[in-house]
Image (cartoon, rainbow, N blue to C red; front, side):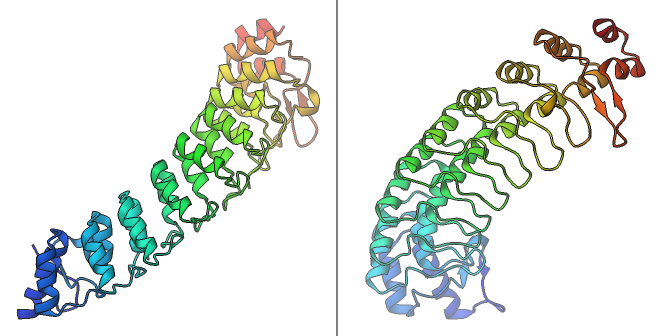
Length: 351
């Protein structure tokens, strides 16, 4: 089935020339391509006017050839003077993007040698290195870096290749980028760092790798969340252990609720994480209340979480501290909240 890229389509000889040209490209038929150029006088710098696949409408020949990895055909196009930095109308992608997306290393190198922009940005602000890092393609990354690709290029959300690699859990890519000197403390539009992404993903090894590269362990994003808070929120025990080992600040509060990492672990009922945090910190009154006047044990007693209660007892938590403080200054002890809710078994422990 043919698809026309023009308003009224092509007709007659023009249509025949257009589809012969497209087929020659898609089939990597050099003889047919040369005939199309010689007989039909097709413009190698023009977009396809007829295609067999809808998503090829916006492409120039050099894009499709780079994407397919047709090295000899790409060499022919370059020799005949094709512009290698043409961009698609919608995604604003260059041939280097298409070569990178398909890991066409030889084509990518040929494009760069011919003047292709190594740091070309598409609609999303992504360079070829962003895509290589996101995919964890270390060989492609090395080729790009060898040719001078910007380590810390930021997309439209200010994400760097390192952030893309950490977000996707690509350990080898993170290692390659940090070894090359990528900036580990840059922030995206949400003020997340690479360490925030690593914390959510759950790789302790990646977390330690970033910290060794001098990532700030207590960096806060626009909501005040630290990597530790993110790791706790996502129940990432390995990362929590790594951050505690590297002496992160256990008592940081987020900007909205005033929660600490322990508040978060209790609210989510993550027993193992509560135990890890209690054993690592000195959780007393000066860190007790969040912005809603709730102590660490508020949700424990309100929602009758017996396993968590026993944990706090084991770690000698002082239940004479209030569990709730109202805006008017009224304080309620854990025992009072338990009785109000009829948690009799818990009341026996606290009595």
